Amino acid sequence: MAKHAQLELDNQLCFPLYAASRAMTRAYLPLLEPFDLTYPQYLTMLAVWSGPEAQTVGELGARLRLDSGTLTPLLKRLEARGLVERHRDPDDERRVLVSATAEGTSLQDELADVPLSLAVRTGLTLEDGIEFRRLLDALLTSLDRHEETPA
Image (tube, helix red, strand yellow):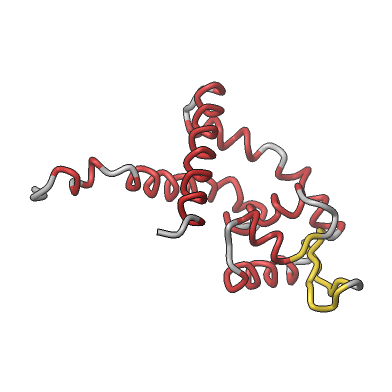
């Protein structure tokens, strides 16, 4: 037993978020396995598809909340599979642009049922799912704001 109630694992906000994140990742495995995609690769493709035709690595990293050291290997694997292409920005050679290839674009149709399949696995109603997403977005906004504010 913890000396202080606030240090009990069951009293932490962070632990169910952590456990749910891990469970969510596991829930995606059987849905993505037929497409030979990992969960981080799937998220990267979602970000590529939902952004402008060509995005910088920095823009993708910001959307995915990943640093370039984590994102670059993901992009290299997706590029090796022929799903994305990386090329220098003709207007600024320092910037690398990422876009979906024809094969990467066609993968959207094959993965179109994944979000609904995952939603069913959560057991949440549509309304609860929407509210949960709203609360998570509010939490992220608050934590981001706190991170930007000097202590």
